[in-house]
Amino acid sequence: MDEPMEPIQNVERRAWARHVCDLTASCRQLGDGTRLAWPARIRDISLGGLCLQSSRRYEAATLIAVEPGDDATVPWETRLVHVRHLRQLDDGGGWVLGCAFVSLINQQQLQLCRNPPSANGARTQTRESNGDTDTNA
Image (cartoon, rainbow, N blue to C red):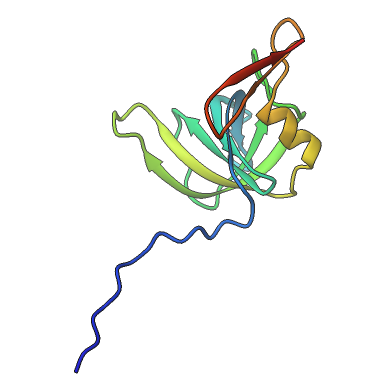
C-alpha cells in the first residue's frame, strides 16, 4: 500500500541569518558598457547577501555594484553582488532581488546595517523579539 505523504514544509536553507534593515544605495550593472546607477533600497542583509528593491530589473547571475549614492546609508564604499533570484513586486512598481555578496561582509559592517547612525549621530535599535525601540545617544 502507498504510504500517506507528509505535508511539504518550508525549510530554511540559508547559511546566514537575515536581518531586516532599510538602507539606501545605488546599483549599477557591471559589464554593460555604461556607468548608469539606479537607486535601490536594501530590505534585509546577512553576512552572505542582501535583498535589494529596485525599479530596474536585473537578470539572475548579473554582477551588480552596490555603492553609496545620494543620501546613501550603506556602511561601505562598493560591494559586488550576484543576483540569485528576482521577482516583480505585486503592484508592478519594481523588483525584489535576492543577491549574494562576491566576498562576505564582516560582523562590524553587518551591525552597522542593522543599527545605522541616525542624522544626529545617535543610533536607533529595534528589538526583533518584541518590536520595542531603544534610542541610545
